[in-house]
Length: 452
Image (cartoon, rainbow, N blue to C red; front, top):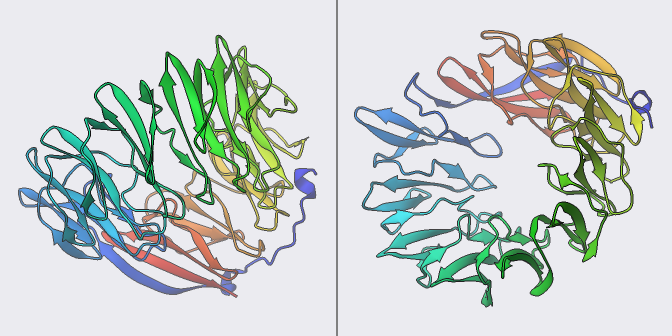
């Protein structure tokens, strides 16, 4: 299926059919007072939290209110996935604590860094801490057993929030605890190796024993390899895969079956199609890379685009960006498109029905949207990957065209100018409605637009 042959059914919006129905002030962040890297916003863009300088100290601001003036800890504010809850740390070199929904928790000598304190459904929180030389996990305010160490990056919740796992050390030995089950993990546990299946019913991790790495899936040990990593479950939770290395060769292991050997695998993770029928990895042979699975090897190129491959939601279509000789191309279902000076990483998007495709491309210093093979207007900088409306008939993306010249483009129509459009905040909430965060001076607005 060629790029230009993708179905192009759309309902193009005219300028008079686009209306800002709400421009709600979310917060006002005084210049040079908000600390970079501390700003967090909820998934619906209605709530904002950040750390600001106040006299000789700092304050945490949530929903335009100062909720703490204690010294801010290493973990900046964060919201739960549903946006209902928030958390941050406070303290000094002697005592630190989490503040959950504005309520200070118990103080400990030190708090360990964590991926996210909240479970995916927002109903629980968990973290690890240190007191009197011992480490432990705290779940919903309850302190667990004391250990010599807790694995960095743990505890980890299952996607449904029902289950919890973490690694810990007592003496020279390491152990894995998942729910109420404890397993011996020999010389160490792989960092970031704890993975729950999407349905939350399966669990995997890797550990080191006698110099080799062993993957454990649902309590059963796999074959030992020199190295292993990149584990993932398929979207339907029925399959699993990871990359293993023996000597100078690496290969994909899927459901216990070893694939063809290659020199190495790229940094991009393994990827299953949404229907779990196809698995791909980025294999290295010499100084070339290719998309491969356990059944076939694709063509080798100089570079594979970060974020490739990308699948349509139904798994019928697959797109991959690659570069040869300094030129970038997008390949969709085996059909290669025209050459560009660049293609934006992680900007390839299929419409929800899989019938349309959009991505950001570069020619010289200009960036532009390519929709179903057709180039749109060129800009100095495109700051948002394209997003489709649920019915696939409309597409929007953010642009920065100079000072105070940031705006959202919907179906080729440019919107109101702001100082900036916040990255990763552009979303459709209906077929004819979209929202995003925009800044004008010190003010941050949640902009809601309606299409006719």
